[in-house]
Each structure stands twice: as C-alpha cells, then as structure tokens.
Length: 439
Image (cartoon, rainbow, N blue to C red):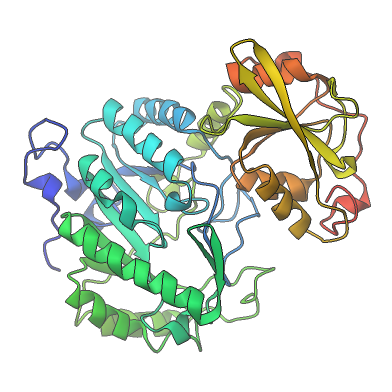
C-alpha cells in the first residue's frame, strides 16, 4: 500500500505551532495497524442533509443498529467539546475526532466548522476528519486546511449521471431542489471540484462507494480508475445495507465474494480499505468495539443545557393565547415567534402551520417555515414531527408553563428542571405519521 501522507505531517502549522505534532499514523480508519490501539469518536453535530439517497433512512434511532445516519443524540458544538473532553479523560488513546452526520457536515457548515475550531483549540494534536457527500465541501477547503483537518472522506457512487440519478431522489444546492439527472450532474460536478481542491490543499482523501447490485456494482472499478487520475489516496467499498422503509429495502446485500472481487479490482488503481466498520454517526471507541460507557456520557452531555443553534435568532411557541406553552403541536394552526432583545423577549409575529393531511411532508414543510428558529416550545408533540423537525437542527422543548420560562431555558441556558413536561396531551393513533393529527 502506498504511503498516505498529509501536509500536516510535514509542514509548519497554519496555526503557528511546529508541524509533525499530529501523528496521522494513529488514524484507525486509514491505518489498519492502528485500529486495535487508538480510539475515534464521531461527534453528531450535523443533523441536516442536502441530498436524499435511496438507501438511507436517518429518522430511525436504535441503540442496537450500527450504520451511518443513526445517532442517539444531536449535540451543539459546545456540547461536543464537553463530550470530547470527558472522553479524552476516559480514553487517553483517543486520537481522532470526526464528524459524519447524522446528516452531512456541510449541510450544517456553521455547526461543523464551529465544532472543529473548538476541538482544535482544546486538542492541538488531535486528528480531525470529516465524511461528506461532497456537495458543499468546496467553499470550506481553505478553512479545513487552516484547521489542519488531515482526512476527508467523500461518498462517490459513480462517475456518470445516469448511474447517480438511480441512487438519489433529490439534491438541494444553493437553496434550490433538483431531481433526476440534473441533480446527479450538480452533485457529481461539486464532488469532483471538492476532491481536486482537497488534494491541492494537501488533505488525505478517501472515497467511499456504496455497492448497490444492479445499479453501480459494475462501475466501482471505473470509479477507482478515475480517482487514481485525481490522486485520491484510498478507496473503501461498502456493501449496500438494505434499510426498511427505503426504496432499496428489498435489494440484496452484495455477497462477501462479490465485495472481495471488487476490492481486488480496485487494487490495481488505489489501496482498498478492508476493515470498515460501517460506523454510526455517534460511534466512539476502538473500531468495531464501540464503548457502552461512552454512550452514557453522550446522553449526559446532551442534557447539560438546552441544545440550540445560537446562529438562529428566533424561538417558535405553540400556545393557545400567547402567554403559556400549553398547546400540542398537532393542534396548533399557528406558532408564536419570539426573539430576545436588550429589553426582554419580544413577540415578532405569528406564523401559520401547514394543514393536516399531508403525512410526514407536513412536518418537513413546518421545519422550513421555522428554519430561522433555534427551538420550538410545545405542550406536546408526536414522534414523527419531533424526529423530522429535530433533524432540521431545531431543538424541541416539550413543557408546560410560562413562555418566558421556556425562553429563559433556550436563550440563557437555564436548567429545565423547573419546567414540567406536559402530560395532559396524550399522543394517540394519529401520531403514527399519517399527517392527520400530531404525526
């Protein structure tokens, strides 16, 4: 296997300290010899995604399921730093901090870059890495280099738009949605530009390719050949994991024999990764041996304070009269929108909510309606809207009490123990995602 190097190993640091302090040989995903010695953590700070893959389902959380896109918690950058500090105390052999979702890091660039800056300041010798679909990486390459991010993984599932259009439902780029081959063309163009820019920046690039039988399994070697021309460092072929509720749920997972054939095929062009653990977005510990105690730390850190995106100015509230948080989201025909001012909290406006009857798309539309809100205060909420709106980076605060008390929790970080969670709203059968009630 060729020697995988990064500028961070050789040159003086853009941050003003001597080069060589970051030992990239301790990255267990890029160095098989390190996988049983050094731990990694994926920080789940990026809930939103900018593409819809036919093989992916991100609104499912199961502690027993290990696959990308799944997480038990979503953290703010500040919580992610606190989590990493506690992990490092527990795991001195923790060498890598990565961001891989549960959405895409660059569909959440503010959260991602803020987290990286906090970690780099606290841990100057930590390896930083990212895994992305590549759609929106290009604008951040210079900053990634400045922060000495040494490894970036791009998921590239084909080099022809005809193939890619069969793998993605839509792509959202520069606030517009695209479908079919137009979506595939935009995605592919941005992926290629990102890979070129990352290599110019001296960053180690790994390609992940999801092997989908009958769609792209016959072009995997072609991808490797193209990536060799672009000086990519390593390639990882990942067998399709059929997930219930996705268009590919009835596809068969590629056999070990077929995966071995593909690895042998790409070997002519790129070093193949042979020890992928298909990690969750909150994976932590040695590769393939996630740490159960660390999962408890993750849960504790996520409850340190209300987890909000402080770049968003507003808070949405479900209320019958505008004084109390006392309304179930499924019953709300409008939401009160508040913001913090030097003189206290001010009601900015009231926004209409989407009408019932549209299924889960109702909650996706509502997430867009309040996408400038850092939190949503509700008297009750069903599992479907909670998951969909929460995945859009909006903190759900379920409570009863004065609106001002809820706003204090969001804006000032006051503990929620003084707020009693609503128990007068019971989610019934209409909360199962039909769009006719709270779900």
